[in-house]
Amino acid sequence: MKTKIAGIEFDSYILNASGVLCSAWKELEEIAKSDSAAIMMKSCTLEPRKGNEEPRYARLPLGAIQSMGLPNLGYQEYLRFASQLKQYGKPIIASVVGFSSDEYETLVKAFQKSEVNLIEVNLSCPNITNESPIAYNLERTKEILEKITNLGEKPIGLKLPPYFDSDYQSQIAELIKRYKISFISSINSIGETLIIDPEKETPVIKPKKGFGGLCGEYIKPIALANVRRFYELLKDDVFVMGVGGIKTGRDAFEFLLAGADAVQVGTTFEKEGITCFQRINKELNEILNEKGYSSISEVKGKLKYLCTP
Ligand code: RRO
Image 1 (cartoon, rainbow, N blue to C red):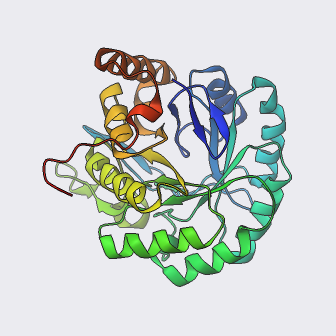
Image 2 (cartoon, rainbow, N blue to C red):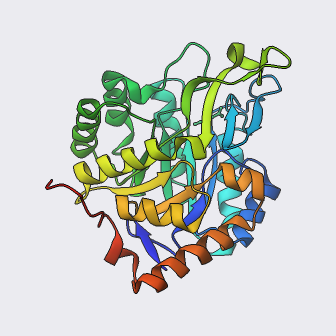
């Protein structure tokens, strides 16, 4: 089932989410050769970073908690990787994080001149010490959008944090509509969560006194709600990629009903490995076939209400 994000064709509905196993060349090459519809790269910064102290990732029964702290090789390396990945003939997506609006500008400018097809601007990392995700602050978000939206022709997207308030979602949507934003990826992990090991009487991860981003099945209802809300607010203007707890074809189908144009898989990729893309894709196709649907556009956003809207 083909889909499209901002004019870029994807051979299927399922791709990898930024963060998981997409930092090093070998990992990106594996994604390139897999059934992931695109090659999403790890969020990168101007300078290389080692990230936070270990243990910084813990698997949980229904997902994971992590505080990776943006370990990456620095943007120059991902510019090079993008030109080497070109040969695989799939969409390549850069993900960028700046520590100021000027840094965001430098990063977006550089990827505008690169071989990537889309640029995901991450405004939602929950694991930077003493910083809340930028997209929880309208003024800072606006300041960054001013600087990054007129630097070239490649479509720009925003990686958004989970929102728990419909007024705030409306304000973010208004801001997105005012600038040249082509897609959103919703949601990032839920920040400031805590998992405690009662045996050891400690948190399960070390950085930030154990507080980190919750991922996986735990967060799916919140991801679905954000996708649905932004689909309603932005549908004619902005493509939506759903992220958060997609483990099965059925999950992907739910995101499709909510309004997602594609879905990104992170935690399940970490747990299951590279074959997850093919499996989820096959499961989704089976559901669509059983229901007699023959395209993504036939189902996208077609959630049926139990009440009169
Ligand atoms: O590297 C991380 O700690 C990280 C990032 Br950049 C992000 O956007 N979301 C997340 O959960 N972890």
